[in-house]
Length: 189
Image 1 (cartoon, helix red, strand yellow):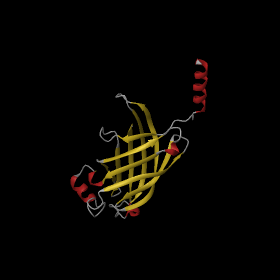
Image 2: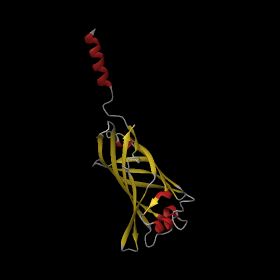
Image 3: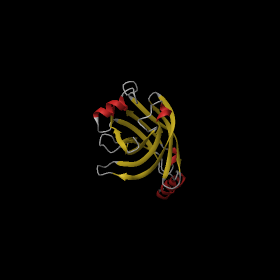
Image 4: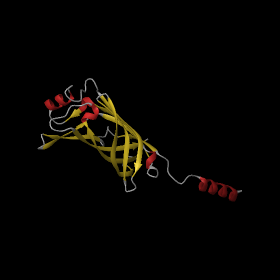
């Protein structure tokens, strides 16, 4: 009887899929282990850098099947912060992102392509300034594993360039685009 149980258990283990399944994560904004940053040219002489202080999101990730990954992020556009209150007020105004009329931006992935070299492309729809456009985020895994508090985490970095005209946002000074840099660390649920 004991041998029959062992053989049955071994057979079930061998018939089980070999790849891991996707895990669900919540982006760790409470611990400030994630950020949505931007960089825009200032008169062609330097750059203005800033971030959005308030956002949330979740993602699903399977290192054995990156193409099955998904991500959704919600950004509070009124939380734009370039470290200069008057400039922030101007960028948030209807001259640019009109945060009072469009207080939320969302990104929802619809495809992830594994490049096979540790990098991947996250394709999806960004709704910003009342306009939805497809974008591609170039991304890579930073790390994954146990944290000191008994949980599991996964971290990524990504970048993309947004053409302002695509979202009906006026040119900012001399720049027709804004570069985005995304740091995403998630806590496994």
